[in-house]
Length: 301
Ligand SMILES: Nc1ncnc2c1ncn2[C@@H]1O[C@H](COP(=O)(O)OP(=O)(O)OP(=O)(O)O)[C@@H](O)[C@H]1O
Ligand SMILES: [Mg+2]
Image 1 (cartoon, rainbow, N blue to C red):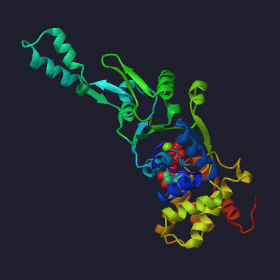
Image 2: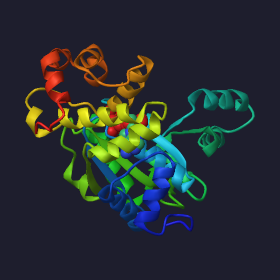
Image 3: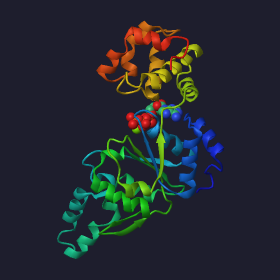
């Protein structure tokens, strides 16, 4: 907890919104508690629902540096934590050759200045007020990496054999995200607060699209939010494989403005289906008839 951290959930929500991020009450509560309890927050959810964006907005709200670690299969600690700068060490050794004893040279090359700091180490060493650490798409990393995270998240410290233990002066505000391509280790989950980030309700999506595409006519923005919300509704659950995320709604509104669209109709919807859906089958499923049904005035769900 930092002096400038928000004092209440409402204050946090308002501050996030000022940075362009619209959180609902449950998400704002989870973030507030993560700050108060100094616990990592694990955000799971479908693609494009604002997991990564939350960490960015939070860093802005807290005026902390954002450090981001993008996970992938095969991610190694030398990319995540630190590695020795071999070429600089080699140069040092060459220069010292003949002037110093072997043990002395060895001591000299294992100094902090020959260490390349990667995001997880940077996060421990960030000066006050500390950093926001985003460990993005942790489900893509492999299990040994998750095992390493256990200690990191539990203690906020790491040991570097040649240098000793590095402990965080200020615990980084840590956000982990997962698209749930695989189930995470229970032990990692237990160290985190957990929040499932769902698609937004229509009103919140409307606010996001309004804020991000202010040039769109108000009526068009309303239609976009309504349409996307119906597509995601229970009645069409079997029609599409992948629902559009918030990113797609925003992009769609931008595209419609570029086409000078004032009102949605089945033709413009099917012509621009590749912005809402990124799967060939889903684009094909959005026929003109289905588009007309989704656009019909009376709610169909
Ligand atoms: N709550 C929100 N308020 C404002 N904008 C949002 C919100 N959620 C999502 N967005 C918008 O949607 C875009 C996509 O969000 P983001 O990249 O955070 O999704 P994600 O959940 O990390 O997706 P992925 O799983 O594909 O990485 C953001 O760039 C932002 O413009
Ligand atoms: Mg993301």
